[in-house]
Image (tube, one colour):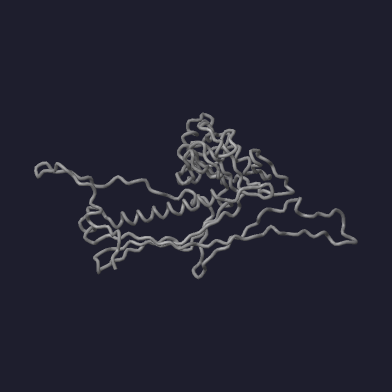
Length: 347
């Protein structure tokens, strides 16, 4: 069987050098400058579970919301002639998560390993590790970005826009992420009311129609932004004067600051689109833009390992090659859509 794309000595030998002479030899560095490493940004914050061996799927149980005083029937006085009123409870549910199995491999010739000055197997292992991290984190980011949006009759993720925009198609270049928009988003995350867009009007839904969980910031609100939004915040004196850049808190991968009790994480895994392309809200973006995400991560999303990543290094004697193989299984779903706020802003 012929293997395609195996890495030979000619594949990994690098760029040819020139003007080298016996009496004027080249000096080679002792190491190499690494590329940017892909890391977990979203995964580090969300709820992570593991399936036990012998199980394929995972069910995350949840309470949709607490009944509150309006959801429980209270009787006044003693029950002398009638039973105490019964309260119907329908706020317990579960979400099924089905992990998907993935594999990938890199094949390198033994001659290539012998003749290359670097430890190729270790380098290729690292490539698989960081590619896996990138794949998983993009999956989590996409799932959260595609959560169910709130409507006139149901709770869900709440959509906000920069400036006075009412859709991605009305974003102007000046409708960037601002400290005021961050505070506004935190207000809606902690609100008990459902808000939705009725055409171009941001509208509140009566509690009798739909109930939103009033999420409290227990030092666990996280805002994910792109590089352009990080720059905009750095250039805003209101933000820079109030942001915390160092503390004893656990620092998340990519965390650049903390503002009003909200951890700010910069990552390129947030969704960004160019002007003229379809924006995250389904309309045509009128400016280069990014969907930033504010959420209470461990309530919003559950990630499940069906099998944590493993890497095996196996000789292939018939072709004098070495296989570096990884396999893993994962899945995940949004658990509480109303623990998510989308902030669509211009770059």
